[in-house]
Length: 384
Image (cartoon, rainbow, N blue to C red; front, side, top):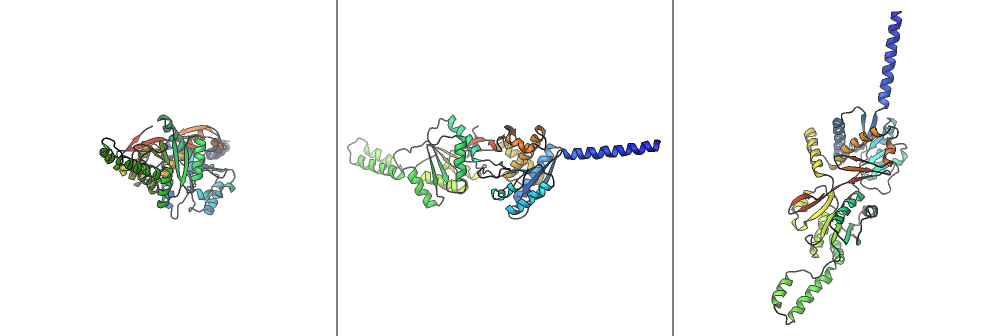
């Protein structure tokens, strides 16, 4: 009898362990990770994987499981890997990295993708853009404009593949603009366009006319006045008090150079640009200062970079910080929603504070609440 009881007890315990294990497994949040692990962009993908694992380590929870899959930066391979993740029972996918890899993902039903792209136009319905998009940046710029009572703002946007994103950002942020201009990035054409925007030829002719008038006049101290005018390039003001340049790197510097050439200075007008990820080369461009831009929290970025370097002995790319926060976001949502419902959580209005800043979630979209910075006299200063 005791033997029979022992057998039944052991069988019951084994069944309990199996049920508990299954229940525990069912309660896990399986996170897919779609990144390039081979090919030209493999370094980006591998650093993202490291950042997500670092996040799991910091969270220290067995509730999350990570399943990395290679995209090879190819849309077809991305689709194949996405279907493999679905077969594994993945609840949510972080990735892909690049916008071009999204085109077939609407074929993967009942799976949500948190893509690193900052583009928000023409996304598949199951893809959420998590990058620092134009609306997030323009919302921050709008706050700065309001604080400084700036009245006439012009937009300068290159004729590239993100000009429609800028238009959408302007509309969604409801930022007031005086005029919008789209320019050619070819230097000669760009300079010509900036001359037209700033009425350079008219203002230059105004200077010539005024010097001629003084020379032919009987005004006292005319020679002194002429000498002062000869140090100028133009006479007359431009019809705006701030310019927002939606550009980056060398192209941004070309636009600023053209503005300086047409006698429009950041000392007199606000020069504002988009997130530059703290490009240190801007610190040495003294003629371009002061210049303002929105960005993620610099102090948090530096802390993350230090932690990542201590762990992996390399400096992380900017997407690594975003991927670190996305793991935290999924973990947060897993506590406030059933696992089955976690994909639907992105339709509800909520917010999450991560290293990158505050994620504002609503209607299948993520915006970021950013900080605002100024570069002046070779140093960076946080405005808010």
